[in-house]
Image 1: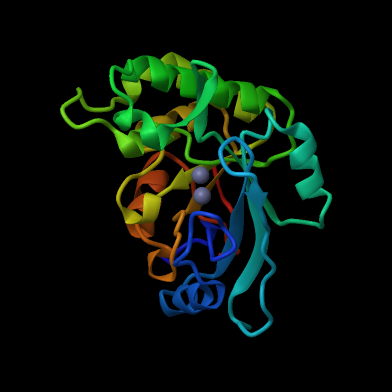
Image 2 (image 1 turned 90 degrees about the vertical axis):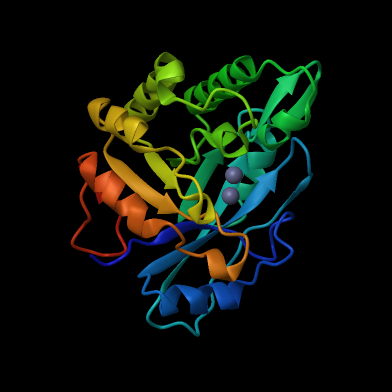
Length: 252
Ligand SMILES: [Zn+2]
Ligand SMILES: [Zn+2]
């Protein structure tokens, strides 16, 4: 089975990807046989006031290069998000939650485990509530990125993450995404964690979700497309199928 497009890649234009490289990411995509790649640089305002979006290069004839952006918490920053989107037509627009509000400040879920005394399950619920608020806000993003992002940064020694513990919250997000014709991203976290995993993709199917897309969330060229072999098997088992056009999204 040919690999699907990698629609979530960061390059040197993202504030947190100093080792990113747009051209080498394209080379890597061709090397591993990807049909398309989308550069979705961060537009974040909660922690870092910086955002760029990328434009593809003409050199790579056999690779479809798409433009995109990853909007961080767009429902908190509607004016700033609108300004980014007004800058030019983008092929892929992701909506992401990275931060929650805690004690009057923003806390990125990657920092949960550093915060002493944090009630982890409560923080995850807060994260999921924020995700629902973002989807319900009507902000113009098409794809919900890494739905269970806090799972990537789970605390050592805590009971393992289980989708079943947050089923009600996750299903509410999926129902809202289905209602608003959004796309669910399966983020492979550069090959080490599927965000989300099969339980959630099955719930997405049950919710009437129409499409799934894949993103490695690579922040450097050698991670482009990482984890896609396992991810595509998982998504297929949950009921979604590749399109005849290899650059298209997977649908039910
Ligand atoms: Zn992200
Ligand atoms: Zn990202």
